[in-house]
Image 1 (cartoon, rainbow, N blue to C red):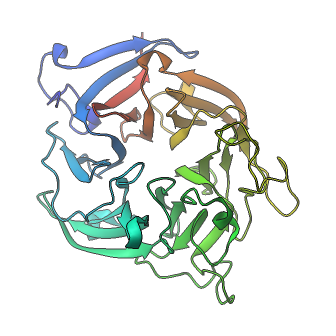
Image 2 (cartoon, helix red, strand yellow):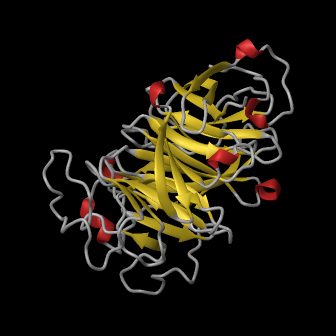
Length: 382
């Protein structure tokens, strides 16, 4: 399962003395020079997300069927960490995102999003936290801090990305569980982005606080299935992307109280090629147009801004994984504007589930498969 103790694995240790042949390394073309792709792990069962621990302690990664693992600085992959909640591992459901508390170095809180079973076979997104033990083997005192209500999913559209902003607020993206109209219903938590304190309390300045019949957790609404979210390092703004139906994947920069249109406004059609029944057009009065849209859906998942010094050619790029498109998308930004798109790693023939910038300036990519991989991606240097 593990290509252990790779030379310089993850940049988390200065050097690990193993022959270079241990690493599986390939090169692929790109507009900015050859990509060097190193396979760090294989044999992962539908990995979904990863998060880097501080001070070169390794990284945490989730496998959708319910396992949280620690990849240590020594290059060894742990057994499943104890204390993880039971998950609803059906369809797209299971153990999903992982994020660290902004104060992890002192409080050791690890946050997990996951699909949680309810009554009559339905499920919804839940978020909880537990403290990672000093030996990295357990989540201690795990507590649920948020539940999507009502539970309506039969295995699809959970959303579930987690992002902390600069003020320590926790944003959670929530799919509409394939129940389209609910994205417009403010008494439900389907098709929303919510904003909470780190312990799950609702901030008093959320846009719908104290409004009758409206969930106070809501930050924005009218989303379909947002499986990518990241904080823009230059502006501090939250960016979110979401799956459209057949066509119409989009990026949004969600603002407090705004409606992002689904299912009233969409650039896509149903999987049957018939129109979305509720759709009124690509743009609809009272809703926000997408910041960026793909008319043909790559099926996007995972998102990372690049702001490292290691590869200056990538500065001011946004990287997005593509599942159906089987590629890593690089969007060149000028301010907030998307100026150019490059499709990378298409020769891998792999569904890209997540992408993160590592502390060493490399990109780290998870492929979604029963034999999923963790890849380190950089530009080859002459």
